[in-house]
Length: 215
Picture (cartoon, rainbow, N blue to C red):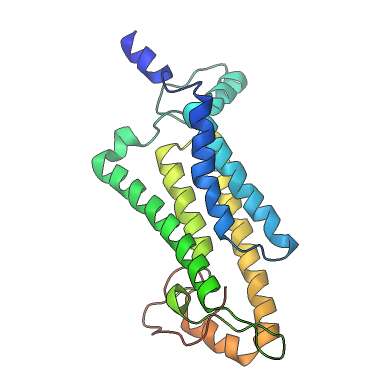
């Protein structure tokens, strides 16, 4: 009975749910909104954050869903509760923390470099950001979103998050491809050379330090 009480003690804490949503949701304030198309992936990431917070400290929605469909209540740790902690141990927890901190860092560094180095030329056009993290990755903030989502998924691999995670990957990949098409149209060969020397979401091994960049 005591173990069961411990399982349910962290549910129904809606104030904590709100805190988690604010903690992770604030990252969206540091991400540029690329035309109207960027609203959809950002909304999907926000929905992922809300689902994570509710599953962790609100109600085990995934468990209720499985129970309603199959008439069987899953044990704690199977698609609800701390799903991977019993299996990955301390090293896995450290890995989860690492991906979370890396995600926050990439989003912040991308925002900082854009606002620090971006300026408008005399002809009214902008310049490509070449400094900082953009010298190695073309879309560091999107990589940060992937890292944050993966950290949350490793801690709380529930039905809603497992469904939404690949959707987020697809939507941000599609957004990145659209951005790169527009950047190539605007900057031409300069951007083509930059794209060949840098990685889309991860640094390109042996690519060297890029001299031009994109956001």
